[in-house]
Length: 408
Image (cartoon, rainbow, N blue to C red; front, side, top):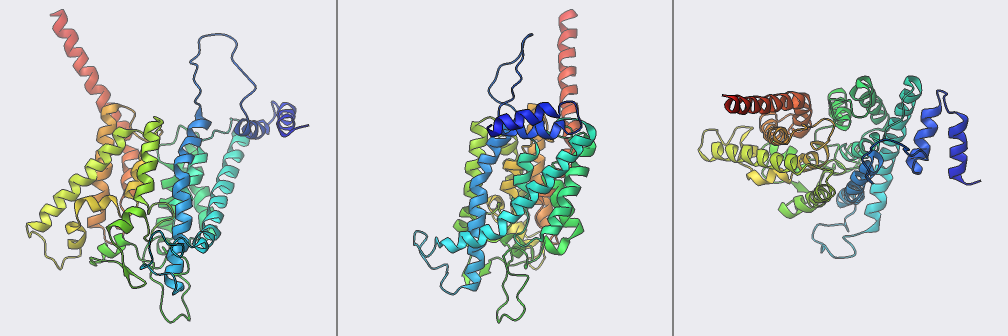
């Protein structure tokens, strides 16, 4: 008897019991459902929630693999003298397999904890409440390891995932009913509950928090953190990080947010598959650039002293905001969440624009937490229904006016 037949047998055996959702979820995840419709008019399409989630995961896989490589690279860059930034990008020494091994050793446990704990909570709620397990957590489970520091303790991640799934999702009714992005809810919990593990200059490079006895302490500072402290350049292991390092992703940061190139390709893939909203992505980029230009104008006009703690980020080239921190990653993979984002076309433009605008605003005026995209997206998640409401009301008023003109 094959695995499919065994699962089908268990599914039929527990049909109508509390355990039915668990076996149904396993069967549906691995295989197509056996049930088909027999009557009535139905929309026939090849896509469903599982395929949609799997498509987003496909867009995230390159970020995950590169995140593992970069995690090992940043660690070896500071601990192994033979790994230097002076090596050629195409040299075999640069693409050292040990980098991927070290990174995988640290990142894969984060992935396993995220999926294992999150899906366990989902299955538990499905059994207790008697509803089917939806595939919505498939993407959340992949996003969570990509938006946390490399050395985050596994027990902290476990607690945060439980909190995020229960408070950010299940209390609202599960997949499709939540008002906040679950992955960002998890990250927000980590940031406010364990701030020292989510910020500073000792959490972004593997081994940086365990430097006792070493002659030279490892600096895990991100470029965004350096700018917030007034430094115009970031030096790691004697090497200055440049624009192309930011673009390709060879900089410290959360696991999956460093490579703007791969994030851009992932965004194009989501737009091509019509899963990600190009309106939200484009308007978010425009909002960030507009706010960056405003701050550049303020800095150039001399309205703020160069000794001010805000000056460095204000004077940073407006387009560089898209290359540093998690802004690009948040815009592509989390601002476009179809559940928590605006649903109307005009609302998407407003929603995305404000996310970009507020993200850069928080970066500049909150040096203690220069990464503002998380708070910006969560804030706009709350206001998305309000935006859609006023967009719809505006459409209704315009149509009522046309009706009055025709009947007059």
